[in-house]
Image (tube, rainbow over all chains, first blue to last red; front, side):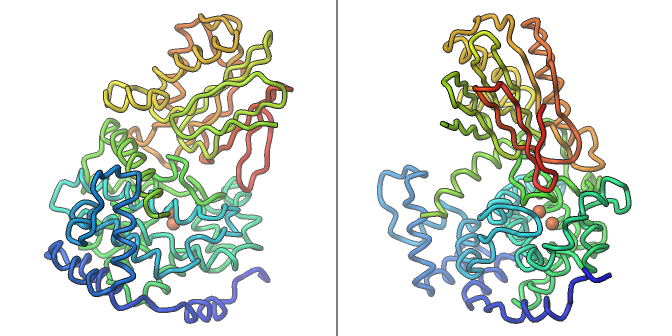
Length: 287
Length: 162
Ligand SMILES: [Fe+2]
Ligand SMILES: [Fe+2]
């Protein structure tokens, strides 16, 4: 088929992406280590003056309503939590990737950032209902990056995407991911995975990006994390924080039940808490 | 033309010429839309969850979030624009309440929202004249004062009237 995307062109687009700064990469590596402490994060931020400035700006945003200006990074971090520092570092290092409109998905400018930020917060909320120990901020980070592949894939997907919804409706393919595979020859999770490898992101984050729509395919030790993001992503789409035409066109994998206690009431709480934190986070990150 | 944009948990009404009430990307949320054929007023509430009893603080802070409280508030809002306070004679339309594919009972929020709204409408002796609910797509909906039309938009699927 003529519409099939040129893999080589995608590979080249990924190769051209600027690398993450060493402090951002260190941050992601520290977050991915279950034994890390807040102090480790503070140390990294302190060595990066641009990051320090942005973190202080965020914590002093009017949405948090702090009476006294916060000027120390330690206090800023203990107030904001690691997750806001991660958001800032990721935002700084991905440039326009998150903010441009996704052509093939008919989404608007900024939708990918909003979807990923909401998914991050929701994934973390889901992780709070884990049956075992869980690293909440890693779930957040996974959610934040899970759909990064769309930023590169979208422009290649533009032409082929026209038939995607029709194919799903006619039952030719079972969901949007399969439509991408069928019509373009690759999908946004694969592209995201290649981007994560290019950036040398930690393996757990690579697994989230590659498997978030089919978490059962992740290796066993990664599954709790991947399922948290799988569910967080779905909550985000249910809340209307989506990236356009693919919204809700994916399957729920009930395998999450092995790792999380999610009753209808718990899920409603997740929606409420995520929405509340999201509106604050979104505003403070704009500052 | 003046647009009233409603976020999640917001409600609002309009009856001035050219007025539009609009909400984006409903997902599993449901827009309950009220139309008053006598005054031409239109109103909408963007409901996210069926029942306010799960979180009292949030219920006070953002009552429009919940089907039970949101509907009451919308009818009050319509009354401010001259509609009957008991809701009598209002035309009701429901839009939204989508779900993920293969959802289970837990993830069935969209359907529970629709059912909760119908139950509370029924208490007023009201029921939807038209509805565009369910499925696996997120809807954006606009209601126009001048024509009383309810127009649904969906990325990749175009737009239609409900
Ligand atoms: Fe995805
Ligand atoms: Fe997603």
